[in-house]
Image 1 (cartoon, one colour):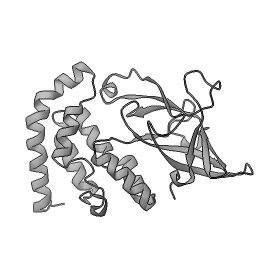
Image 2 (cartoon, helix red, strand yellow):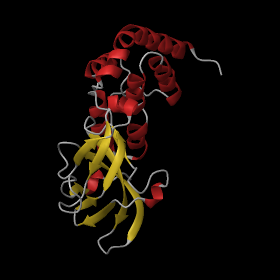
Image 3 (cartoon, helix red, strand yellow):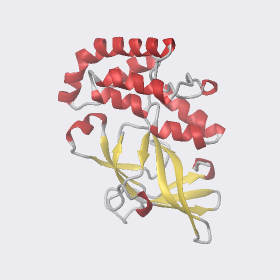
Image 4 (cartoon, helix red, strand yellow):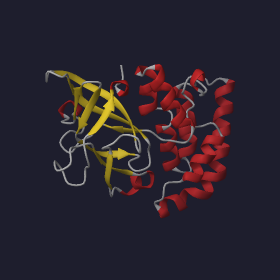
Length: 235
């Protein structure tokens, strides 16, 4: 497939960014194991964060192919920075843009464009590639859902603010309705707790860890149950 002139220009701009700041910082980021907030600020300024967000929400409305072109160039110098671009344009943010309400899309877009890298919370201790085996549950109670469970291998744990949490949904009568997605913002959602970072070498530099949304006493270190409003559930 032949790239358009606009895509070639984007690729060239990404290459210049990579060969500049990232060539200088890549090794240091690996050695320090610290999240590169300075790189995030530079990515924001270069408009590489939230590229796929529709223009009406402040993004550029770019395609996944456009994003991949940028990721490829970033990865030549720094895989951590490349992964930040992945999460800031695909994954959770693209899910919200596809299935969220207008209010959810605006909230998610504002966070990403401000430098947040959203986290997806799917994997559990006993449910990895078999996501249908997850035990985290969201029980509807009046005008809110109460989410109880624990997740791990969360890329962005302790760094990300926006979390897309997948859970088994139950109505007020206890009937299961299937798996649903819920948005929770760290610092705003009571009960959303990070327990620890995973020691998995490369992923550590972009913060991978465990989170819990369980009632206190159910599992040490996982905090209280997390209540979220009805508006937190994706459509």
